[in-house]
Image 1 (cartoon, rainbow, N blue to C red):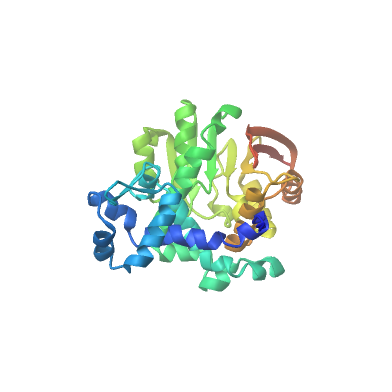
Image 2 (image 1 turned 90 degrees about the horizontal axis):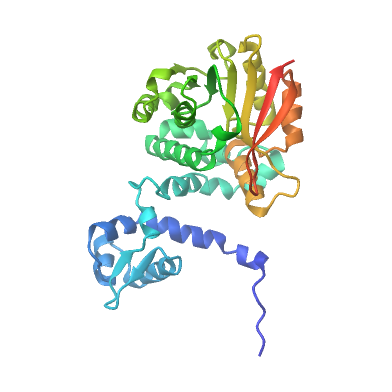
Length: 336
C-alpha cells in the first residue's frame, strides 16, 4: 500500500492551525505559568489555567514538537530555552512578533478584498486604520514599538557601516529613536533630530538617555504629511522603513513634503528593503502583509526610483546595506 506525500501546497493549508496553536499557548498564559511554577503536571496546569485536560494535552504536545516545552520522566512540564522566548519580559521575546501577527489575523481573512481593491483589509475588519487602532490600544502600541525596536536592532545593526553619516540627520518617522540612538553611538560627531508623531516619540527620551546619546538628539513632534512640521535644518533626511507602510500616492506625498523642507545642499536617504524580481515566498508573503495591514507593498528598485522622480528627486545612488533574500539598501537622492 503506497501513500502520497503531502505537497508544499497541501502543507500550507494547515498553516493557520499551527499559528493559532502558538497564539493560544500565549493567550492562555502557559509560558508564564511554567516559568512561575516549578514543573507542574498536566492535571495541575489544567486546573491552574481552567482548561479541559485532554484538549490542553494536545496543545502541549504540539508545543513539545516545536521545542517550546519539554517533559521530564515524571511527566512534568517546563519551558525549553527556546520556549523562554515566549515570555514577554525577555529582551529577545517572541511576543512582540507574535502580537504583531495577531493584530492582523482577522484582516488576513479578508485578503481577497485587498487583492481585488489594493486597499488594506485591516481597515475593513477593524473599522479604523492600523495607526488609529494602535493609538486606541496602548498595550498593542507598546508591543508594536517593541517589535520596531527589536527589528531595528536585528535588521539594521550593520547599517551604519555602509554609509558615512555626518552633519545633522533628520530621522523622519523615527518612532521612539532606536535607529537614531544606534547611529549616534556609531558616529560620535553626528547630531540627529528625531521627528515623528507625538505618541510615537513620547518614549524616546528614556531610550536615548539609556544609550547615552540624548545630548545629541533633538526630539520634534509632527507629521510628515504636514510640510510645515518637517525640520528645515538637516543635511541628511533619513526615511528608514517608512515608505513601505504607505501606498504610492501617500509615499509620493511624503517625499514631496520632505523635498519642500530640505535646504540647499541636503540629501534624501532612504533605508529600505527592496523586492527582488525573483523574490522568495517569505518576501512575497511579507509584501502581502503590508497590503493587508497598510494598503502598501514592498517595492522594486525601479519602483522606488519612479516614486522619487515623481516627487522631484534625481541623482540616485544605491548602496547595499545588507544581503539576503530581501536585500536592504540605502537609496540616496538629491532634490531635482
